[in-house]
Image (cartoon, rainbow, N blue to C red):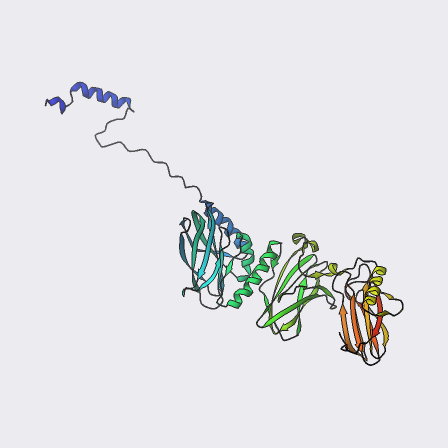
Length: 454
């Protein structure tokens, strides 16, 4: 092999130097290589979509009384995959846990476990943002584990936690959407919390906001307890009373300062619900009655301005003054009362008596009832009159009372007696003013009839 394979000739060196000059004219220094030019600073990566959603969620959560915590977890799940994250609720507070997912995840479920392995709560709704709540009401923090599973879809997830009071959950749930799971060690309390949560979610979705923590009202059998309820002008309220601790059925009425009924619960279930919109600011009261059993009622109040909730037309629970008002002409109502009595075997006594009553006003009359006779008293409301009320007494002792409960519904008392007596009949307009008619009819007391029937 020749030396030309190892050494460059003078002509080759000249050509190489010329080529170097053409490539930038760099100078060759005997002090080492040239200093490299400064590098440009790297640009920050674009914000993550889940981080951006969490930032907006955190900002709105703070306005609802929930403070984001530093505890969070993130990762990636394919369909059917799962992960577990440890969380801890601070002593005396609650931890609201929500999991956000990217667009590829269509259904994400979350279950909250105690360290013992018992299920505390779960959110398995068909959505990709499960929400849970863990509370530590005592002086010790409460630890639990969140099991997250991608039921349908694949993508990234971000688990975030917010410290708050229990009352903030309905608003937070509405913020993230879905139906949250609430942890409790008491199965009965879980059911009660679910009832309250469902009511709160429905109320908050229609513009109502919680007035604070629920109030527990002890009730003995058949006892009625009134609690104050202040309403501002043009303010609407939604109220729920949960029957708990042995109380099987509770009823609720909203009363004004004079005791006149403004709204009432008309449901047949154990709990009571009602709604009302106030025209003027005034003190009202909520009357709770133990219908069956004894125990306690847990009362929660949600309120909102009429402009936000839609006023009376936006209410959907209970009955209010407007629901009771009769639209039927009075003569039509009187004719119906007389026909009703005749069909039931009564003979109408003369003409019906019509009186004009102011709201809360009363009219008194006396009706003689012979021995072995049944008498029917029927109060019929004229247009614009709500819920006529009848009270029958003898010798100062009340014997029977009735109130018309629906729009245009009459108040009817049937009373039978084996001995002659004089009935004092009080006709009262409890909720509105206008014309009310009283129709009296009677029939013989059958030998097999109980006296009085009611």
